[in-house]
Image (cartoon, rainbow, N blue to C red; front, side):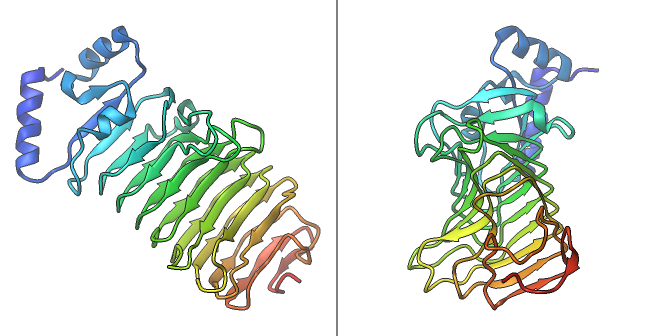
Length: 289
């Protein structure tokens, strides 16, 4: 049974009074689609939008608001700022490949710029639009990215996720990176860099670089945990290349598409614990050299 718009709005007002988050929907842009969606779901027409930016504009910080993105392709016309703390942007589970947020095809314009804490992305495909664009740029703490698919619109051109200074305690899990250039980039400045990053259960398929860092390498330590990740295909730019000598962390239970781990595609500082990682030669604890 559908709830009338007036009853739905009253219910949401009551939820807001007690501090509960609201649910907003993003759907394909056809008017008929929107009208039928409101009827079928029994939701308020005021909670249904045809752009991610409009839905974000209705969210409040630290309320636990959720934006549910329905299957479809959403092509951005500019970089989309995600500046509402505590918001979740999610597709429907099992439909990540059919729910596409596509970045603007313009040099240096990222698809999503996350500037607030405690943002969560899940069940989405997110694409950078150019060879110098990221799908996601994390610029604040405690971002969680789960079950997302990152592919390049340019066959190895666009990048995946960058973590800038201040993007601490972020987590990337159960994601797929395909045909991306820098799949995961830790970007540091003289003031600091991303710290306590966890990457687990991810697949990197035919990417150029799996995980690397850049910036003021002499002064920044990025603590990193990489667990249960798999690479497929030849990574011409490198697998894990941590150029900052102060880096600490652990790389464990990963599988790499290499004959052995004695390859120039790895740069593993002494402070990073390397154990139980596999190549075609088997499982080894020997540090790449």
